[in-house]
Image (tube, rainbow over all chains, first blue to last red; front, side, top):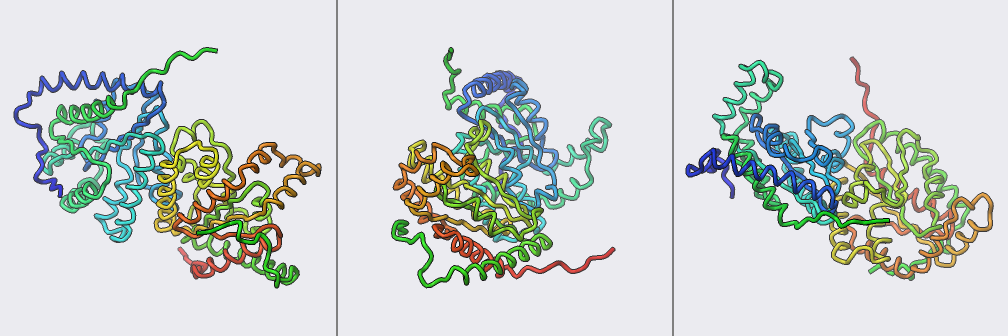
Length: 246
Length: 246
């Protein structure tokens, strides 16, 4: 059983920021190379699920880790409150539409997991529906994996309760961050423990593994995400296709 | 185990065509009424999967059975050869997009089942993939059922080998049917036994039941489809919503 409050949101003490930043730069470059081969080969797809509490740095991670990827092979989709049409369908309907074609990296800023997180925390769905949705998510992720060779990364951006307060306060204090402020984020913060419980349960019952990313220091956050992706994508042994003529 | 060649493609001998046609007319009217309540209430959705060999009368059934439904609440989607973009996704990607919103009847002329029929008959996918796809289909249909209150009808239009020949020949002989002719239908006909085996297996391993519809006589075909749908939709106990003012 995962206990998030027992997992540090800081980097291991023996790591030096300068060293890690140098390694991360190389990993980010390599991720860009791997993305270009994948786009040329068109045998695999990559889906990156970014989940985390408000202020955990989902946007920042995307900006830093994927900066060497070619925009034509990379797409970010942010899941907001469902539209009326989306509400009139099952919860995976709008998600399935946004899954990556072969050759593409698709990043989900929030995802289908919100449907068993915010909805569960607020009691908008009962536990029967939570259980059915967890089964459906596992089947859905399996489908993407076996039927479209999709490599799925699920990153939980692990921020501390204290650090979140600093991040949200910055949005109130700094003019160029005002646009990110939302009173509602402070209200959701009151449900912190319940969110942690739901995240822990989602991770426990997920067939494909999650990566817990300590984010209180951005340099470590970027390193973990880049390293996790490069290590897994190297194993795909992707190749540029040979010349075809005529 | 279902053995399709042991199931008659004709109506039971004791039924009179005139009697059945009168009953069918009432069922078709009632289906139109039920559709209008469903559209007003917006609590349920209906998905109708029409599968069957070429010439089994999928288009004809749709034209006859749904003629009293309001077009704004009814939609037909015919699955053809996948596009390049569709091929670059899992097999359910293009299907999921077309599933009905609450309040709607969506008819699939062919469906996700083709991905374990024609593709299996021709050996374009291996048996591992067949098994994974069958699991994925069951999970998908369950998702539509529990998360969007979708009532799913799966009709197998059961035509005899001999009757199919007459139907395909008409497309060669009659000027107003030439547009339906396709040389390829005659080639697929050569794989008849293999198709039957794959249909039988799909039905056996499907969690939601199929309705086998004998179609060598159209009046009986229309009756069975209309009756199956009306009986199940009556049980939803749908109501027009009360007046809301202000």
